[in-house]
Structures are given as C-alpha cells and as structure tokens.
Image (cartoon, rainbow, N blue to C red):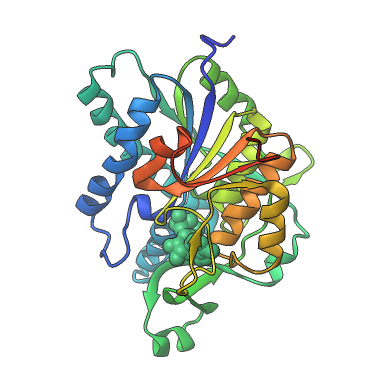
Length: 315
Ligand code: ADP
Ligand code: MG
C-alpha cells in the first residue's frame, strides 16, 4: 500500500556521477562527485518517491583488468563482476545519500535500500555477435590493437567492448515497487542489471553489460513511475552537438525526438540510448522523460533545465 501520494521519480545516474572526465577515479574523487546528485536527491525525497539506477562502465572494466593482472585466483565471469559493482556502487550511493539526508536533518524519516537486480535478456539477441559497449579505461591505441579482447575507437579513445543485449524484463520489479510503496529510496539495476537468460524457471548469468539508460526506461514502465530522469555530464540533448551550430533542446515531443534520432543527432553509446530510453518510456505511456546534467536534476524536475520529452508538447 502506498504510504502517500508523492509522485515517483526514477533517476538514472551516468558513469560521470562517480568519475568525471579527466579524473583517475580514486575512491575520494568518486565519493566527492556523488555528493552533487545525492544532495539534490535528498531534497527531492521530501516531495517524491525515488528510484536510483546507475551505470558501471569504468568500474566493471577496472575489475576485469584487475583480475587479468593476477593468476593466483580463478577468474570470474562478467556477470559476477557486474554483481560486484552493484554492491560497491550501491554502498557508495547509500553512504553519500545518508550524509546528504543528515545534512537536511531528515535521515531518520527517509530510508534507503540497494537491491541486487537481474535483468532478463534474449539468448538470440544479435548484440552477442557484435560487442559495442565500452567498459574500463581508455587504452593507448597500440595496446588496444594487440589486446586479447575486442576493443573499439570511442569518442573518449580506444576502449574494451563487450556485448550489450537489450533488457527484456527486470526480475525484481515487484520487490522494487513494494519497497518504493513502503517509502524506501531504492537503488537498483546497477550497471544495467546482472544480465541473465531464462531457461524455463531458472536464470543463468551471461557475459554482457546491459545499457543502464535502456534498462531504466524498462524499469520505469514496469514499476509505473511519473518521470524518468537521466542525469549525465551535459546540460541535455543538443542538435549539431560539438559543432558551432550546437543548440540545447528544451521541450520536445516523442515524435520530434524520434525524427531527430533518425537524423543521426544522437550517437550510439552516448546520447543515442538516452534519447531511445526517453522516447520508449513516453511512447509506452510514461508521462515525461528528462535528460539533464547531474548539477541540474532539481531544476529539470521543476521544468527549468534539461531536455524534456513528453508525448505532446502542450502550451
Ligand atoms: P553517461 O555516463 O551519463 O551515460 P555518456 O558519455 O554515455 O554518459 O553520454 C553523455 C555524452 O553524450 C556527453 O558527454 C556528450 O559528449 C555526448 N553526446 C553525443 N551526442 C550528443 C548530443 N547530441 N547532445 C548532447 N550530448 C551528446
Ligand atoms: Mg552512457
């Protein structure tokens, strides 16, 4: 039973909520960066029920590298490393949020919980034949070309890539809904969720990393949230991004967004999945999706910042 009539926000935190461009990604840097969204989420929790999802690209890639540097213990498959990052980042978000709530003096009223989440993917997803999801650090070109695993040139430089199948369904959606209805801030679908395939009633982990924007849209629909908020390191989606004609998009209908996506304004692997997630959420009945910077989550929710996608853009 819902404890109140607060609207629900699903806030998807990008990798840069933890590690900013140009940083090495020390644990001190990651905690300091997280304080930016955590302060805003703590304030928003007074008026909204909240679900937090997050990426894990740098962290899961680092874990892969760490275990490849050591032959003394058996190596773990990617699905287990994704699970590790859910615990690691879930803890970091929880403790940062705890401090932010304490600063507001409302920590005793507001509880949070991290849910280990797995996400069903299709065994025959064509993504398994073509790895596209960059993980881990940027590699020198010579190292990338000789690496014993697939790599790709990304806008940030050469990186390792793994398969990224589409999310079919979040296994723990009922548990998440129940916890949200009970008033918990729920941290879930970390790193896009642990990818599993279904074999009858059993689940089997697979070697892949699911896109956190796409799974956030899926969860937002399965749980029925009011706004999907995708927070990243730019103010919003732009036309002609990175050119002198660059222009930030404000209010946008799903139809317009689809047209711009088809015109190639939002590349795969960065703004593309965010726009796709926003369009999918709105077209399947979600009221509104926002793409905004980590600094402007509150302003975007108030309608004053970011790119705001709705079925129709009314007056
Ligand atoms: P996250 O870790 O939050 O998922 P990504 O790096 O995947 O972040 O995506 C955000 C990046 O998308 C921005 O830093 C920006 O460089 C890039 N980008 C590409 N095209 C656009 C666009 N049309 N508008 C805004 N940003 C864009
Ligand atoms: Mg991304």
